[in-house]
Image (cartoon, rainbow, N blue to C red; front, side, top):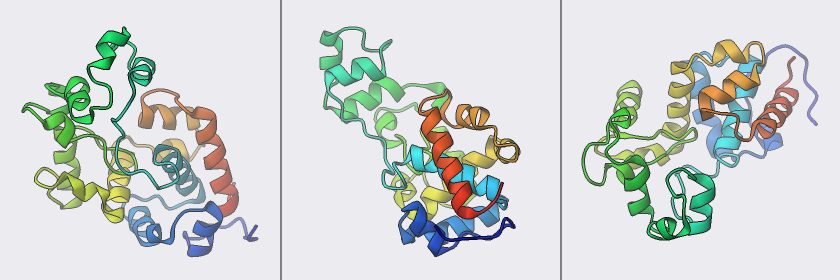
Length: 209
């Protein structure tokens, strides 16, 4: 463990090594911390911990929609109450995206194919044409024409920062309110204990209390 004083230090490459996060994320993290005032050990630790869970430690940047019928019944029980229904969408990402995301006004998906085209991408996965539009405007990139831009490390992290800021999560990171942070990101408490563990470990490594 690298020893550090309790005073705030910016994220550095040694910290990323301890967190087992690839060095390609160093510059994007510096940018997002500066832009969205993620500028204390607690804020950085909570951001990183949540992102680690959301993205399998910064390795998965795109929603996996290739599920078996049995798995569909577990993840989306209300949509796939029987094996017969689930088998119609199993191992077919495009069809599944249309089922769960298509024709949803809250996501802005109005056209055929929008569900798959604007599926979850980024570190904290942005989902739906409407959110792609808002996020793209905030970041100054055209995510409507080229949604795959969210797979670029800088855009992937900056989109997470945009989401974090939009939900006002810095306030809850200041008090280490992991339950509220998790609900604002995930909509529930999925993986809550893991999120707390990752955030606490990041805080220890960054150096803070």
